[in-house]
Image (cartoon, rainbow, N blue to C red; front, side):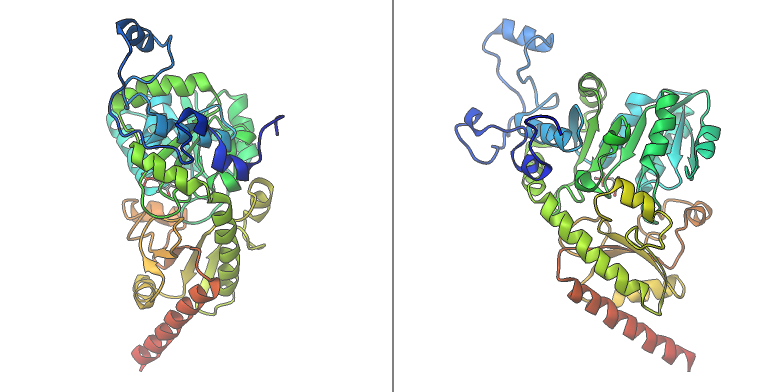
Length: 404
Ligand SMILES: *Cc1c(COP(=O)(O)O)cnc(C)c1O
């Protein structure tokens, strides 16, 4: 940690904001303005020329949004950041920045469902080809790199199978080959994992999830290891495509971020207890959670994550219908996509988040019809387990009665 740099738990609250610059307002004000007046024509000329750092127009920068950007840049140990109107706007901006027609992108074996859709579109419209590989060994990564590979794009843990990717391994090979690495760090939040420290060049978040934490914003963040490059994206891709964040959403995210460390600690603790409960349940065939010692990525998780996260996926004995019946019997746990909220959420990847992925490709990713994903919330873990248990018991009764 650099001299004078405060600890993570302090920076989530103070970084990038000085109340003295805002009439002493403890909380960053919402600058709900589309444009900014110039004192005179010359000042306007200087701002457009980049010689005066002042604000011009809110698509190019806004003081409330800038507090969030500076804060997340610090939390990810990056040099600059941009806020977007959704996680997908951040994904598409960084890919538009890095790729041109005819390039190749190498991806982890699973990516978020809409990222999958975007990659299909890039191939169809711009002949940007992609490969999904397991990235388990140096040989497999080196073997998949092509002359025109312009980006390595990974998620870890992978949604929703919780497979882990060794960040140090991937970044080392990518750095040797001068290929930029982009990591979707949504599942961890910067509290659990900071990919730039391993040599990644860009980190992005669906801020909708843990960074918000309260299920009331859709937003995205992109952090880079170079201030110049982030500023370039701000003044090109983001300015021209326009996927910006509103000042009010930035304000809600600034508010959410303040409690990120304490929320994440609770999410992680709860998830460990619930994973243990599911692991010992006779109606559960498999539990995918990096905190379980038998999990294939457990040792990687220990090396690169502070704790094991709040997401668990598990496979039920039975079919798609069993999985759906299980969800329908839950009383407190809500059926919803998204994650990282105070409420525990359950979803069925094969028919929900990953329904756009063809069945065969889903199979290769390990997304079977009886796989369920749980986003563990902040409730008392015992109450979550009791809700799961009553649903399991109803299922066994149903199974018995249909046998008869
Ligand atoms: C939700 C999510 C996204 C997309 O973010 P939006 O804010 O919904 O656009 C991308 N990656 C991961 C891992 C996600 O969970």
